[in-house]
Structures are given as C-alpha cells and as structure tokens.
Image (cartoon, rainbow, N blue to C red; front, top):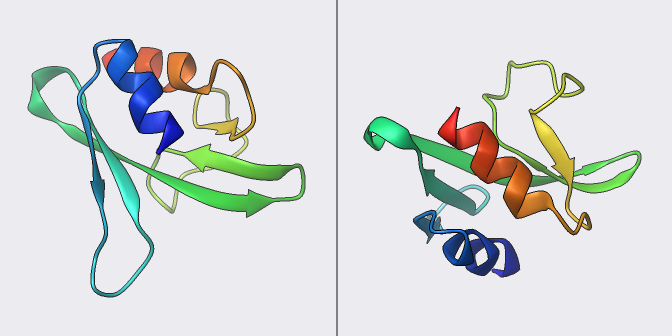
Length: 82
C-alpha cells in the first residue's frame, strides 16, 4: 500500500489487484496505457519489488528494487516511464 501512495505522490496511477487465486499485484500505468505489474517477492537480501515478467533475469539493473529502499517508488516510476 505504501508503494501505491508513494507512486501517487509522484503522479503515477496505480491500482491494487487482488485475484481470487494467486498473489496480489500493484498495476502501474505506464506511458502509452501499458500496465506494468509490480509484485513483491522474498529474496536472499530481503523483500523486493519486481516489475518484469517471471522469465526475466531478476538481477539485471532496473528490474527489481529492495522493498525497504526509500527511493523504491522513484525507481519504479522512472523504469515505467522509460
């Protein structure tokens, strides 16, 4: 929820999707009307926000950010806008 509010403060639209089966995701509206799904997952370094498809390499730059990072919303917003 905090990430959604932080993105809103940056002027980025988002909505929380809670499916009947599966994990909840935060849908972020990217440029051009494309929706990017942000999931939270447990990593060796702690909790992380991931916003690329499941088959994508997680450790590449711009594909994940620590959930505890102060600039998590900034990083996601800039990646979605690119």
